[in-house]
Length: 83
Image (tube, rainbow, N blue to C red; front, side, top):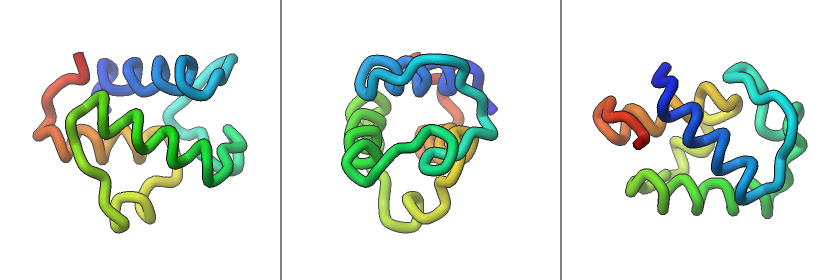
């Protein structure tokens, strides 16, 4: 997992969704972070804008944890760092 991408995603979560506290790759977006559909959409839009990628329906179904999100971002970007 790219530490740079994870750090950038953590920043997005804090800035866009006002999440506080520790964030770990194994944390589930819905169950652990308690993101509802509106907040998930906000996160998806922020990720697309920040990383210049498009998330499709298959990506959205595959993303359960923060680590899953980081892996999808890295795959879409061809492994490039988030900064």
